[in-house]
Image 1 (cartoon, rainbow, N blue to C red):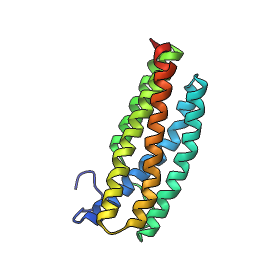
Image 2: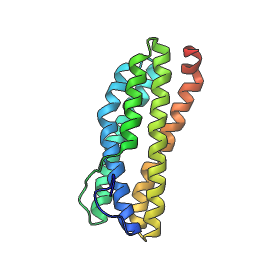
Image 3: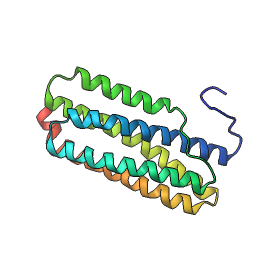
Image 4: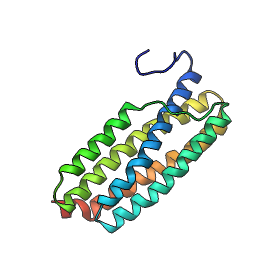
Length: 167
């Protein structure tokens, strides 16, 4: 079975597993965002990360709602991908000595997190629709929209000044 705790034989099994994956990932993000916030020096970056921490906490609650709507207990399964992304973020923030470069590294790392979340939520929306769970899809779509917006905001902050200062 490898990384998976139980067999995945149906699209519904895969849907639940993917929910468990992103549930774990979101919980790890909630634990790790305060470190990024603490190391960020750009005021707009810091403010955006704080806002996204609140959004992420709400996303965890939304996932719990989707689990319940789908007749499942909220439960996470280890997400090696998110663990790796967050470990890499911690490493790069630890070796970047210049504050401006650290801010650019934080944005880069945060965007890696966002892109992973976008792939997971996009997949979950598609699975939910295929399973006839438009109710679940609508809740998941809210989070997907937030993830796209967060990524766009990070790009704007990077391109407006952070990358230039780091250069």
